[in-house]
Every structure is written in structure tokens, then in C-alpha cells.
Length: 502
Image (tube, rainbow, N blue to C red; front, side):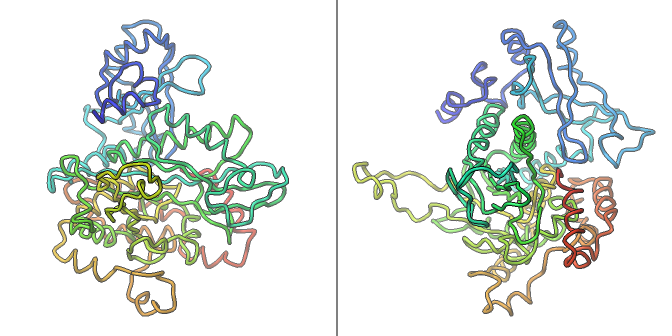
């Protein structure tokens, strides 16, 4: 029943036409759609090492050729996409995943898009491909713990437009602001509609804290948050959502950035990930209205590998200008309830058993609505420079690591913080906690130290870990945050260099 309702309410025209859940799409479904929707072009899309979507266009001239590309994929130059692939052996295959099909909302010519997976010369999934690494992580977690990994992203970004109007918002007070104080709400709504039409399962959108004016331009921070879905789908959604937001901004004359930090003293943009562990469709994070032992073990595992996770979630020097105290960004390795200063936060989960709907609407009869499926916990370190497939794969490894750690519950107790970690009363506690890295170089060191955890069970390949470490160390930024702290012109240069990251 729920699956049928999701199909009926789904805004993706491909789902509406085929009357199937995306995971059930077949090649014949795709051909049927192309034929009866008069689709004239097909785009294969896939992320490169820079995290941005790449596109390969096909004109559909006959059905035989259409079947060939859908069945066989196409050949691409892997050395131009990934640093870890040498030009001497660079050929890769890209194969479309039918479940990701959507109609291009920007194309003048009717065009169907599909995300692709990478395969090597022997026809095997490319071991170092981020998308395949995530799939290996998900499979290993399920095989070893009989748990399914679901996730959702909170995508923060700034919209930049000329300062106009008579209702300037109060700086650093843009959270959930409405028009006319918030100026980018209509833009955000248009982006959300297109994301939904391309398959994104959105929870909500709103304006965020960041709001300031510089040199005749208004910088307004926004957020689009998704609902929990299988982790591979969550990564796909984020990749497409960033592509859509940038395209809408370009077409409407706005600039958009997902950069982690664009000026000192103003809110940075994060990419928080909410996590669920499920078994037979049941959320395993809650037990008798409280956080379960499974959840606390998983959190402990995340905290144990958290410094190394920055290698996948914080991939350029400006990432570490965001991870500073008093900016609602984490700096210490700890967790807590409803606490935005910690690295892993357990938000409100509707576990009180109170029918708030009845209390707000007395004319409604009381009902026993099962809210256990709503509980999540979130990791707050990543930002828009992250590779969502790598980051989610790393998170999945951390979850499995915690579930297999013999001292996980003890570590969970030791790293729990009940109040704001930066309160004076917590100075002793703060001194006992590990800190997140302060540079790409330090992040690379942490990954090097814990690479065995990620390479265990063959999830992350040695080549990928080597490539990530090499890339992070190439920034040569070990003392950069300290060196430029009093030089705003140097910070501005850095921001400009990484303004369109990920």
C-alpha cells in the first residue's frame, strides 16, 4: 500500500508514466518511455574525481542503436576523470543505471538522463569508483550484521544576488526566515520542484542562519533536506540536486556556492548526513522509546574513525575554516542529544508517545501513530566539497566498525556530552576528547593511520585511499589556517579558488 502511494504521489514523470518504483525499471521500460514520450536524446551522467556531474550525449536515430547503448554502455577516458587512473590504461566503460532515469528539465530537446556506473576493461565494477565503494560497504554491512543502511543529506548553500528591496534581514539571523526578509525562497522552491521531478525524495526546504551583504550583493544561505532512503540513492539525490541548483542559478542570473566557508565570521555551509539502520524495514535505532544499543555502538564506531572521515567529507583547505568553535560546526569528537555543537547529534525522534496532533487539533481523535521510523542520528562534519559516495561509504564503514568493536558501548558512554561542549563547565571534558583535523594535511595523516579500517573486507581499495591521501597532501596546508588568520585578503583568494567545489 505504502509503495503504491509513493508511486501515485511521485513527481518524477518517469515514475508517473511507468507506474513503477524506480528500482523496478527495466530496459524495455526505458525504451517504451523513449518511444511514447518522443525522447530524442539520451544523456549518460556520472561524477568525476572533482565531484561534479559529467555528461555524454546520444542522439536516438534508431532503436537498434538505443538498445546497444542501454545494453553495452559506452567507453570513456578514465584518466581525464580520476587522478588515480593512468593515461596508459585509461579506458573505462560507463553503464547506465535504469533506476536513476529522469527527464532533463533544462533541455530544449526532449532528453532522458541516467546516472552511470564505471566498469574496468574486464567488465568488472571499477574497484576504486566511489559509487561502487559505497555499494561494497552497504553489502558488507548487510552480510555481516543483517542491517540496511539508509541515509539522508542536508544540503546547505548560499544564493548570491544583487541587494534590492527595503527589507534587509538581520545578519546571522536568517534561520527559517520568510519573505520579504528572505529573498531566495522562490528560487529554492523552484529548485525543490525540479529535484522532486528528477527523483529526489525531499523532506523540506528553508532559509538558514547565514545572511549578509557585501559590496552590493546579498548572500543568503538556504538548505534542502531529504528523507531517509537507501544510502546509494541518497548519494545520487545529492549529486543531481547540486547540478539542478547550479543550473537554475545560472539560468536566473544568480551565483550559487556549496563552499564550506566564504567569509570569516559568517555561517559556513555543511552537508550533514542523517543515518538509519534498518532490519526487515524496521528502524533499529530505537528500543522501548530510547536509543538502542545498536545505535550507540554504531555512533561509537563513527566517532572512532571520525578524524579520518574528514578525508572524504572535507576535501579542500577552506573546509577547515568552517570547523571552528562557536559556529554550529563540530570541532571535537563527541556526541549528544539535540546538541548542535557535537560531531554526532541525536535529534528529537518523536519517542515521547504523546499524540501532539490531537493536542494541537482537539477535533481530531487520538491515534496510535507509529513514529519509531522517524528516529535518526546525524554526523555534522562534512561539507559541500564532499564526495557523497565516498563519505557515505566511509560512514557505513564506521557503523560496521562500531558494531564489531568490543568496547563500543563503553566508548559511547565516555564520549557522550549532555550540554554545550564549549561551556566553561566542560573544559575538563573537552581536554579529554579527540579533535577533528585542522587541515587537509592533518586529515590525510588521520586516514593513513586508520586506512586498515576502511580497507577491511575489501571495501575501500588501496588505490582509492592512496589517491585521496595524495590529493589532500597536495594542498600543502598544514599551517594554512593559522598563517592566514590575520590576512583577510589571503582568505578571500582561497575562497575564490574553491568557491565552486564539489
